[in-house]
Length: 278
Image (cartoon, rainbow, N blue to C red):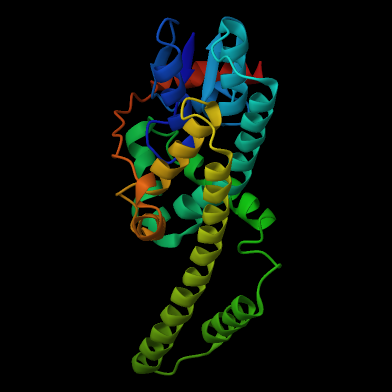
């Protein structure tokens, strides 16, 4: 078996899959590959587990396959249902936070996320994934009401103010600098509001996780820890999640886990793409 993961810590499902295998599959031969080989997936999604002729995509599907095949976790039916339900909640709520943090937050995307792909994928395949993942993130956040039409009056007013400023003609360099300064204030205020909505989702999830109190070895707990680690990456330029957790939940902070990417070769990428379309 081989487990293919993103070679950079922007994806909680990849982090969680690696951690689950490390903790629960010590006697199972699984090769962990931080090769960013999204070409294995028709949907361009990682992690991907290749087990013989079987290809599994996504943390939940991979973990359930390994648990059922190798009888890894002994738990009651009730605990299993709670664990599966919490995984769904995490993949819904905390995925929104990750999507905004890494792909829709302009400072983080331009200052960090977009740049990592040149280190984890061969030329010329390094250009499309950040754009595709950003489009996916926008759709996920839209559904959650972030950057969508379902906005608070305050956010709507800020967007109208932004539009007015962008459409205001400038007659001199001084006028342009004044407009740009005002525009920056408006954009900063919009970021603060969005950050607050993400923090609200995070706080709601933290309360649920603590109320359920499932063991740390359970798949949902491993995924939760991965989302925390992912969103407190020290390379992020806007670290609002880290600041919030330091203040409100310092017990959740973990040591940073460095990843050594193993970029898939150009030849392998082409072969995988060919298999997907033949």
